[in-house]
Length: 355
Image (spheres, rainbow, N blue to C red):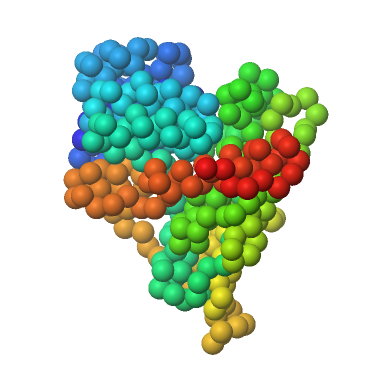
């Protein structure tokens, strides 16, 4: 598979291209961004020659003819970039979230619909063995019918690390903050748009596809910032209430040291519960037969389902379906909930799920 990485707004591009670089049957045929300087670390990391480095996406695609394009634009640009790239008849791997709004999500779906190609939305939490194990146990009926999801997730902030989780100094974070798209409302910044999509999209997956009836959301209003760093969303389903909390400003990053509260999910069923925390080696289960609870080691996730690149390549080659959260359908449900939360927070009221 020939793969090109286009638009380096999100630092996850470096992580995704590393997955391509490590894949035995994939090749990085090109990288492209309007700012050549942003691409240089990736070009150096993977020894990408100058003739495969582009600042014009059209020349990039036309000259290298990729099978798959990885896109990592700022959230507000997701629809625009899918509309630019889709006419070239390529598969697309879009880094999370799906979009800045449900109308943008629908633009993306329409742009892909006539191409016969696949669009996958990458949610990095999908690849955590703990969450995959929790989903397997739910599908096996261990906790009965899921009726509640409790989600808390985030990190110290989006500027504290770059690709490969390389840390940035506190002084550098403060220097970058005023100009970063993560902190621009027009670009789709803020913890709500960065992390709520994770919670509600994977929450929909863990809830076996259930959608809420209405949503209530509250965001903080940090002095000097135009976007939130903390959001709490309550979703009412026909089976009860679920809570989704996003946080830029956790005490520690969960991939280094789990903060308190822990980052991850707790799912309550009508016959048991399961807790699944980011990066942890076991999950906790309660059942009616063992109400005191017990730990289960996480499953070993094997190739070709360990990361989005190998999973997408496998699905394209085998005809197998994408895992739930990567599909446009499930990501769109998550986007509905996010849009409703945005409206609720802005209007300071409970809002019926947007369609």
